[in-house]
Image (cartoon, rainbow, N blue to C red):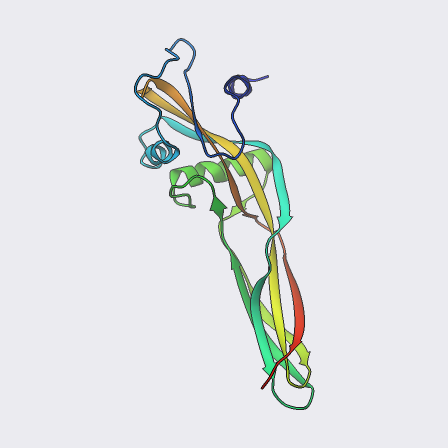
Length: 200
């Protein structure tokens, strides 16, 4: 078992809580007399470049799931006859997380996350994904067609390891764990249509 794995076992990191965990590097004092920093405080220091390193280490594999349906387009036929309509649709999905700080493609913790996903899973993280096109649909009399889109998404849990050149609040190393939801490149969109009666 590698050194990081030993540390994780030793401090019993609780998954998905977003809690910060104090751990001292070998040969340093284990007591923290200066108070424990918050998750936001630690990751803000990383984003500001005030840590020697700030590496994301995923735990387990990528969990793939179907995202929620969102209304992407619609067309209403208020006549008494069937009609064929060309319906334009568009839907977007972004990235969400449990860290409570700036977590984007341009932030330091975002770049660390991207690099980790690529090296650990050989996949490219996509911060935002949009689908748009046109569908030809038959719309019944006094009816409305609704176009729904849902994205196949990815969930990753893991821990940021922050190293300070000088002790920060008693320790050289701090750990922050959390969860990220978004998508890797190539994950598809699913489309579905539904026809409902309307009063025109």
